[in-house]
Image 1 (cartoon, helix red, strand yellow):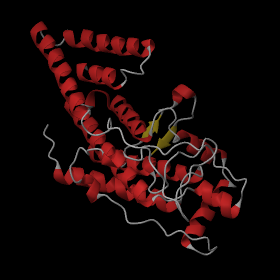
Image 2 (tube, helix red, strand yellow):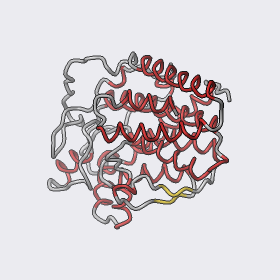
Image 3 (cartoon, rainbow, N blue to C red):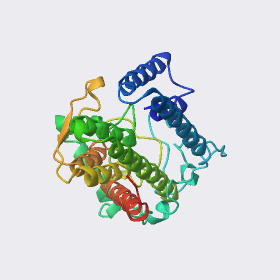
Length: 325
């Protein structure tokens, strides 16, 4: 608990509110009161010190991974099929240099890079045009459940990778006493490692291929007034990030808890989004990927590419890292 408390403070040191600080302290105190009853005072204090030291070392190491490096303003490539800033905010590119960060696993990014997306074409029968038309056609007949699906995986506030950690916490609650602490720690590490490296690999491909988003193509070729279910993120299209994050999350949880583990995801109860139930973690990952097409944010091939990328990162991790329990 001390490790997680210290890491949370470090991560949010510049942005956390007093309410957030109080919540961390209350959680920390509650666990400390519980554990004080289970071990003697010397072990308890030694464990707290150890947790703090490990957290500080991890955080200091993380600060050297490149995310704090100052880069020049990113200049977007221009030309047919290249990504352009999108309405309504026309925001600057998101994390264009993220691929330069150090991955946790040295060769995971190389092992998971994707081939080029479908070539740009305005021809009505081209693969590019047909995948854009699918996004457009789907958006015109969304059911209420499909709209709810889109908003559920929008992950605002939050993020795709954070959503899967929330799912994992719900699994631990569901497991109760069956979920041992050592397993919880290892699964948390596996999810963090694979999803962090998947983000780097995804962003490397995005800015290498710089594919334009559905809203740009549809507005220029099909329907100038069309809009997605909600605002399009400010980065190139291919591959889809939610798939890239969801597959490692689903594969880790499947390996640890089984192929047909049923879960009801209540991640967004706090903002009154209806929970979604799944018969497996892979079904949840597929739901997340499909949501980005339904919402009008990604083409289908981008979702598939993200799934392949995320699965490759997870496979690389299990093939190359030995986790001791």
